[in-house]
Length: 136
Ligand code: CMP
Image 1: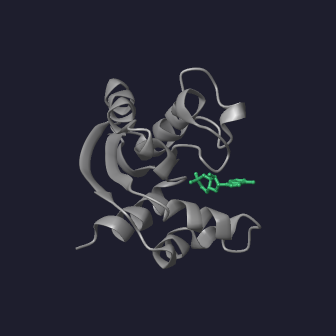
Image 2: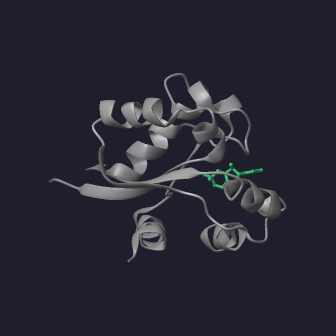
C-alpha cells in the first residue's frame, strides 16, 4: 500500500553559510524526495525557542536556539513514501561523527550543533513543524 508522506527539513545556518543548499537539495532529489514547498528565511530566537520547545529542558537548548536564529535557513516540505523515516536515514546520526557514509551529516556536518540539517522525527511532529513554518 502506498504511504506517501510529508516531512519538514531545515538546511541549518552552517550549511546555508557554506552555500551547500543546492548540493543538499540534490541529495534529497536523488533519493526520490519531491521538494513541494521551500523558503529561505531567518528566524528570531523567540521563534527558534517555540520550534524547539520539545528540547526546552535540555542543557543545550539555549545554544541551539541562538544557533538556529544566527543566520539564514532553508525550510522545505519533502514528500516521498515513508518520508519521515527516509529523511532521517538520509540525514544520518545527529552527531556527524557517528553518521554513516552517504548521509548528509557525514558529508557536510561539522559538529553535533552544526549538523547541517534538521528533520522531523515522526509523522505527528512533521505536521506540527510544517504548520509552524508554512501555515499562512
Ligand atoms: P536537530 O535534529 O535539529 O534537533 C535538535 C538539535 O539539538 C540536534 O539536531 C542537534 O543539532 C542539537 N544538539 C546539540 N547538542 C545535542 C545533544 N547532546 N543531543 C542531541 N542533540 C543535540
